[in-house]
Every structure is written in structure tokens, then in C-alpha cells.
Image (cartoon, rainbow, N blue to C red; front, side):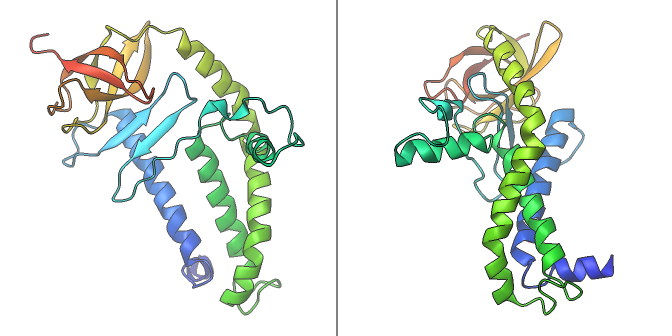
Length: 242
């Protein structure tokens, strides 16, 4: 364990260790928000959005903006990686790696975890690949590490592709407008919050914003008015008496 900690915080692996820490914090925050631990004393700005037009888009602000949107339309007019045209080839590669088919943060997490694991294996004092644990050698190893990690991410996320495809299809049939739900996080002015609603016994979480730009507190009841034009969130109105 001591050797692992030493290698993780060495200069060669420090950046990836930091990124892995951010990803771990991200998913910990998602879990805390999902189980609704209202007894916590701090206000967690978490937006765990099951978007009805995208697979799953989870956004969180923790002093850094990790809002990355990979639209499911990435497969438009792409039939194979070998399609003629640089743009189509790039989109084909993204499609091959399951971008747009699996939530971006799931892909990013598996890629970073693979990068970190391979880097720790290669860059430590006991390694036969980079026994001196030099940063120059670690830099040379990064590109092949990235390629291998992307391929591993595709393998690890492949079983999730049909699951999220079915989830996306089922959610498109849900009627959201007019539904009443409870805010899981506060909405501050024009910021986005998380709404939990019960649809036919299934709990669905949505990304929502206030209809008039005013703050709405966590735990308040709101009604869904409509979906925003950008498709990333819904507009809600606070119910005064419910």
C-alpha cells in the first residue's frame, strides 16, 4: 500500500491521480444526491439529469465546470469508421468508442481509471518499463497508454450500450409536462437544479430551472411547465400550496 501511495503521488502520476480524485468526488456527489441525504448540513449543487433526448447527462459544479455534452446524434450519417471525409471519420471513431451511446461521464471515468492504473503499473520504482520513474519516460508512454485506455473503455462500456438504448427509448414515451415533483437541490436564480418525480412508480430525475428566475428551495414542490429549447432542462414553477 505504501508503494502504491508513493507511486500515485509521484511527479509522473500526480496529474492522473488528481483527475481520478475529481472523478471519484463527482460520483460520490452523484450518489449522495441520488439517495437524497437531506440531513447533510451543506448544500450540494448537483445536477443529475436523465435527459430524455440524450442518454444520461450528469452535470456538477465543484469549482470546476465539468459540463460536457455528447449528443446522441453523433451517429448521424455515420455508417462506419471508414466513411470518406475527415469529419465523418472522426465521428465514426467517436461512435466506435461508444461516445453518444453511453453517458459521457461513464466513458470519461473508465478512461481516467484505465489511464491511472496503467500509468501506476508502468511508472514506479519497481517497474521494468520505467524503473527510474522519470517524467520524460512517462510522457513518452502517455500516448500509447491513452490508446489502450480508450480501447479498454470501449470493452468495459460495451455491455451498457443496449441498456442505455432501452432506457432512452422508454423515457421518450414518458409525459413530463404537468407532473409534480420535489426539488432535490435548490435552484438559485438562473442556475439549474435537480427535480425528482414519480412516474408510474418509477423515480425520474430531471434537470430544471425556475420559470421566473427566482430561487426555489430544496424540498419545495414544483410543477413541470415545459422543456427548454436547448433540450437540456425543464422549466418548473413553485407550488405555493400543495
